[in-house]
Length: 449
Image (cartoon, rainbow, N blue to C red):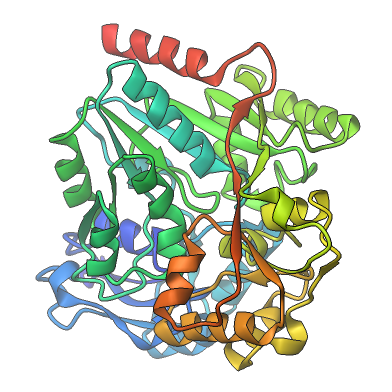
């Protein structure tokens, strides 16, 4: 009979991994997490999950090591199991990870929603997707405005982006740009939080979602979950909304855990229906019907809104795109590139010849990226590298397809004084079926029940 705790390694990317630990491991004396492995987030693998968050069973915290070292850590730490806990990777990627763990003699585990979801005393509306870059945040912002118009006090809770000092980021509340400055948010964090603040909405995020949920519940009638990548929600949803992407037919069931979201959805939004070929839209709809025939289906559009489009024609343009969408999201280009082409740019400058080393590494890691510059900025050095690359491009105008106010960020980094024009996606219904009607009808049923 076993008397020692079961020794676990959690594979993650500074989000789902920490949440799974907090919910399932932190207070369980029968489990001992000996390490997190990390990927995607530069520099995270040199840190520790701090004792202040890890709890009394972990007085020294938990080490975070590079995923490349998985086999060495399994053997050195005598691990019993490897728990996979990050998102937006192909099913083949997950099974390669399983093979690496099994070759070391370890079990390989995928912990499911019932084990890892927290329960709220309020109705939770969850917005998820089958891939990064489908447009979750546009839909979340749209719904937040509609809920407010319907008299519902809504707290938006964002999937974690804990790229700074983890203990300080345990439970964060952002209601103003000053809050972002005080928290020293990265560009990736700002991409998600700024649009809510600009719309007059408050967003919660951090590392410890028990504490975040408790804080949000004091201000709201409804919780709106804005998911990250294609992860499933951290809270048990009363209404589950999943986006599929009409510009990426075939991706509905090829990625973990996006396929889970599709199969579990109450409502499926066929995003970017306005921009895709009719046959692509039909292919995506057929996949939805095959895998979740009970779900309600809403065609959605994502028109690109360009500030000052008349300034673009005939100009040499550098396009800066939303980082996650065109890195691990797999898109070659985004809203900015679409806007530049439509507005008649004379040239779209390829940033690779001007990329400083920190940015050149991103292009090497993600060779699918097109002639655009990803708005990466996980660290001050990477943010400065982004600014330096923009300054070296010689562009007449920068089109910013990232949700952040890039002009303000570049001014703070003393970048070159190149005019910046913003390109934004906003959600619109693409048929007589309105997403807000579908959601509000279900919400009334939930609340009356």
